[in-house]
Image (cartoon, rainbow, N blue to C red):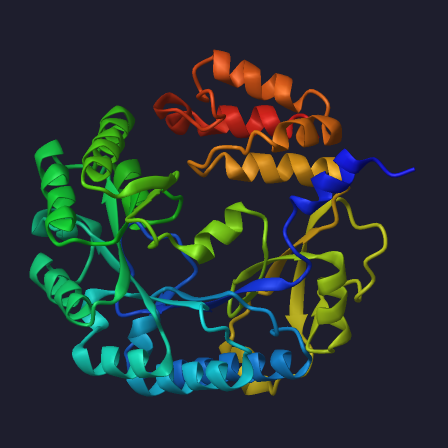
Length: 419
């Protein structure tokens, strides 16, 4: 006899379809000093950019023909710098997506851009083709800080890009980085005040991460640059929380703030466990077993090495997929880094645990009606949440507190340990 509470727990999990499509564009005019993303700097007239845009278009066409892109709710072009492809290449790629993907009226279509490769002509083309959200890599409005970061735009160029988007009444986001060596609290506060004064509808703030192999990491190792001050970065993140919240941008995700209705639905889907497909060099995907099998059955991609057999795969393993049938020149343009797929085929208990852990990145209260359902699916889950609340890491709604936000790994680890 089935348990109604366990059936209800299943209803809390995301649907079976692939909801998000991520396209990675690994090219920039110049790599920033802190960047560890998979990207390379090229001249804008390099033939590789043409080949790569064609390769992505071809991959979208074939996957659509195989019926794998029929229920998308969000599309995201990230990088690298997608705007660096230029109007001609981007228009061709986005036109292919519009032809081949069954877009809903409310599909969120985001493109990342840098101010140095963005102008009104490009915006006009993107707008006409259906790109309805823009993520602007500003990082700071302080020219000295931008120079330290290795950015090739200045504050005025960033302001110009924002003005163009505001003229269109566009949905857009601005990224800012704090904790940069040499960055003062006054400089950080000024950048925050700029986005507030400009009425930016969505802001993502990140503390500088010192990644191995970057120019920043080499500078620290050689003693020419100090290590970032973690305490100062934490204070800067807290200042961002206070200023942005007071200005009407609610803190809805650990790194993001938005005016009501301007939350990033693509990023939210990651933290709500929706399935997404990543295309392009070094792109990642998160698929359940049934959709991965459908992807492999299409013949477009295969598991690297030991064929396409999925027997014996663990509960949350990663696979590397390689192209099967692309023309050699097109396959080469996608780079030599195979696509990484996180394969999820968790049991109900583990799926619920993962859902709750991911939701701890969100400032979203757990519905009280869920509590008996969660308790039935995962005994000790409520006890663990209550312990975290007593430690001051969660509030009475089981939403991370300011302290819990800064000590997120303690929350995530305690919940995941139940699995």
